[in-house]
Length: 306
Image (cartoon, rainbow, N blue to C red; front, side):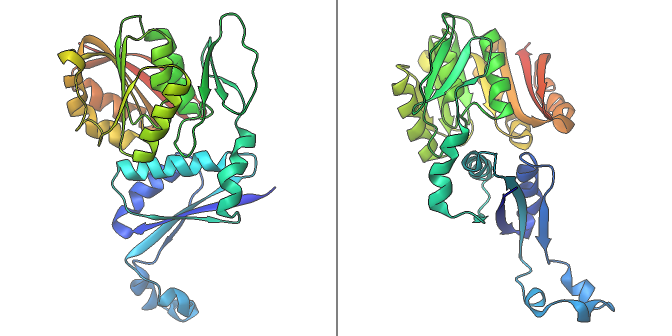
């Protein structure tokens, strides 16, 4: 089996956050951190350490994961970039074992029509698909934005949206990536849909995907909730945040201000081990948990504003 190393180099102070993001993609991570090397050099093992390591910059560290050839490398890279941008972490990402030209196009072979709910089917723009009578087809070209429908977090969110979006709803997608969840909401009958993302490339991709699907959606750049606008002064009936646990917890104090009483919040991008922590943050801000879906160590949670 062939593997590709994805290595993210950052400041030592950001290493824990970077590792948290990387571990959401693969359970095993490789860490290079020489910040406490001086202590080791004073021991009997000091002479065994290579000179290149002794002279390494101790203010930086790195975290690596190894992606098997059958996985979608581009989606991994896009996910990492999106989450590091949201955390405001400046880092260098390297692909070792695969050149950039190869992965920028080869990922398409892993992206096939995917059913993400009972009726929703996400179809890449370069694939042909014959829909069933009750299929809701979403035509997607994710480009370099995260969200093709193949990742567990996206599928779980889409399944909860399909069950809970009602005709006439106002829906907000925070950290909208490729725009897939906003498009799902619109296709399921939402009257007004807004999506925001910190990445300008993602926003451009979102707009293109919405146009491809004939969906009128208000996409714009925003650092989480800072730039979110209420359409006609009306609060949202349902909001979705498919990001990471730390960011969801950080925005939990403010998200309630954008959702009407009785409205819904879907939170995903959460590993099972942190579900209770996210629950605590959201419930303490005026919500009650009413549902959750789990798949391969990931969960998506549904809350209602009291």
